Length: 401
Ligand code: ADP
Image 1 (cartoon, rainbow, N blue to C red):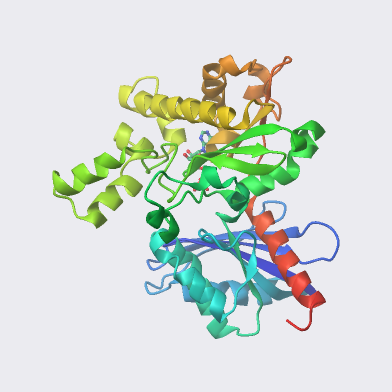
Image 2: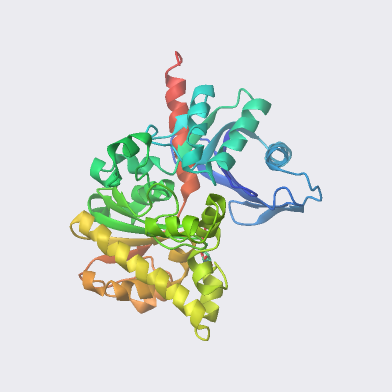
């Protein structure tokens, strides 16, 4: 039997999963990737193999089919269809690791309790990430589980980059800049040398532009600053999130607009960003298709690009210079126009856009002697697979644990 690793990324009504061969030396090899959507309401399941061919497509006409049923369904599917594959471990994407977790960790009762204490710091994500951990501990108590964090990569930042200018007691309570998208940035840092060996020791800004969006400054492959802070709401405007907002606006919403905290939270997380500004859609593809004729779509895109430009400048300042800009995430990898607009706006940094290369997706989308811009596909799952293997490898080498 070939041991495989299941990588899980659980949301409120979705479960993304990937299956990796858990081999010894080389990088984990992806075997399947799948997605359950609409959990709790006649969910749909789609699974592809490593070549991208659809190998399962089902709609489950069971209204009460939630995360637990989905996990059991995936385990049963693997038993039935993954000939010769044996589930050996599970790696979870967990949004928040707080101050303590600066690397992946094997989950036991104590760790799970510590991660549950972080729910107030990420109330919209952490509970969904932890639900499958609890379910699998109950159903398969001997199955090793590892948590990999979106915050961990940023714990190496200088202390000053992690502070807000608030009273010290608040900082001690945990009101700090944690940063997110760390699995994506760690992955980019790990592959930089494949694009240009000099970048691994250089000054690089990474733009992770998807439904969630942030920028990260890498110095020698380590995060020294990022645009997201205490929550995944900070920094760039996103699909439905507002990005940086004067804290005074929140007081205004609560006091003068008469909104309750949940309502205000919902507005800033789910009704703002590209969706809120355009009044049309959170989807960049849709906005691009409307932008030529619809001023609201155009304004939303312009604000997105403008904010990227402003935050990019601040990260270049934190780095004290720039060797390269990396685009990743659904928009960063696919939206030719966003890349072109960002690079033209940042011409002051010395970028020379290569229109033809940009139109083909690069990977290098600039020419000339200035800093380079590259397109690098995001792969958070492979980082979870690597992290899980590392943690379990260490455990196996230390039987006393
Ligand atoms: P998530 O943060 O949910 O993982 P993704 O990284 O998948 O999101 O990014 C989703 C975003 O990428 C959406 O705004 C979508 O419109 C955009 N996107 C995907 N493909 C394209 C494309 N070909 N052109 C423009 N935008 C695209």
